[in-house]
Image (cartoon, rainbow, N blue to C red; front, side, top):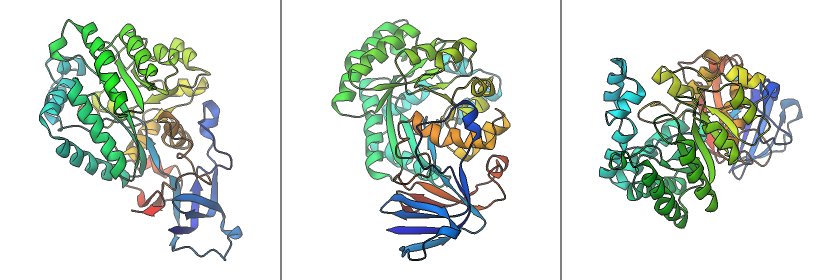
Length: 412
């Protein structure tokens, strides 16, 4: 199958030589071509350029006229929990009444609520609901997504989640990465016996996850009221022995030390980062760890905001992801996350686009295949409706700007 897209008003995020990520001042730079064309062959980006240079001898299977429209690489959503058993809107009412995230968790809500329901739901039900969510985010412009376990909190339920993610990888067109997050919360049965639960994660869960090849990465919720730096250090060390590179929940609720332990273990990303100061910024500078901010969770929970502007000005890269989950960010709409980057974190449109494409692709380990318009990369792109500028993408936060979705070179 070959596709030629003609008369593109602007072809955005083009690269002749692919980069792994962009940082600091470079985040404000976004290569694009006005009045462009793009050729797709066998699921890959084959060529692109200005319309004045288009070879009229091309004979594609389909021609799309994109007059007045723009073409972007699909969003990469590097942090989600979209395999879950049920919504948690009742806890939202508790939040409206003034209870904090930590107070809801102490009452058996939050992650523990989902964990209880996870034990009761079948794999088929879990698969079907997650598949629908994947379709939803695909048509909003997402082409790759990382999905975590963590609502199991025992061996069988964690394996259930990860097996569902593995089935989704095999059956859904989106590029999917799987992360084992057995250390998401302390189960009630292990209250006051936290170290014993950490032992369970290390000695039983990780070996079985590895034996069934169910995860690409390992994660820990290293934060106040959850897992300590010492717990995290033990779990990451064990996971890396099985070839699982870390991705860390860090500093959402306090200065936890999660960023530093993530850097110590060369984590692919450290995520949330509401509590990030000069010490944390210094520890991240020059490393291979991507600072990843989750605007949806901070917005939904009414939390303080990560100091994104300060981090970029200090030379760091930034990725943005949705944190799609039933308790603290019940949306996987990356168009909205892009808008939040500008509205809340004062990111330029160029910075936000870099943060939701090339940098978020790096944060989930797919930047060699996705995240930019580059010859040879997967043809995961979207065509907008008629929009006046790239700034319109974050500006028009309440409308869907995606008109056509192409995944693996196939129009959806």
